[in-house]
Length: 198
Image (tube, rainbow, N blue to C red; front, top):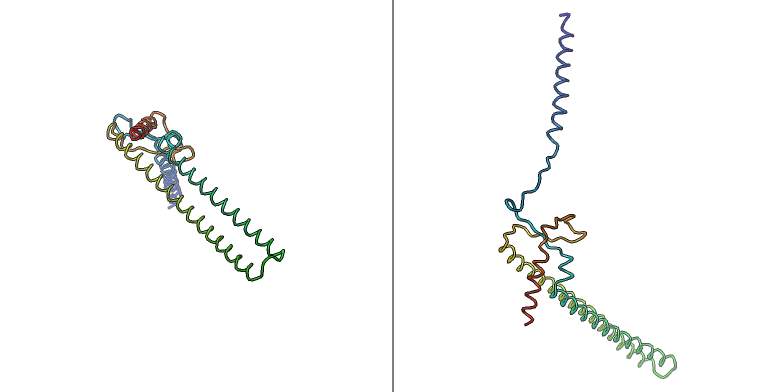
């Protein structure tokens, strides 16, 4: 019985040693293992298209942007001219009323007419804004359809499993230049645009 505390201490020391071993052995097994990606020849085939380059060099997209920009500028100019005419008429009305060249009833009638013109002008602004927004949405959908069709063609020819979009500041932070197929896609898209021009 005198040896019981000594035996318990030895057993406790052995258990603590075992727990210590399990604790540090477990951490080594949990470290993440970094493996190299599968090679292009044997694994999944991945490529990317640089969205910024596509945006800058795709002929069709440039034309669409220019057309939308011209419509936007024309709409802004038209609205600005109508707004100036409205302000000019409002100032003229105020001057005539203050000089006593019109009655109170005539002034109110013309003021109501000016307010209706102003309201129609605001409605026209909203309508034009909505129309331009729809044009931009249609151009984006057409762009996506064109690019997607060419990517499917290219993917079928070369056998890519995934074709990603890369742009500076986007979701993909770094891309290997050897996976860049932007030039091939641009060549296909621009050739299609030039062919349709003929």
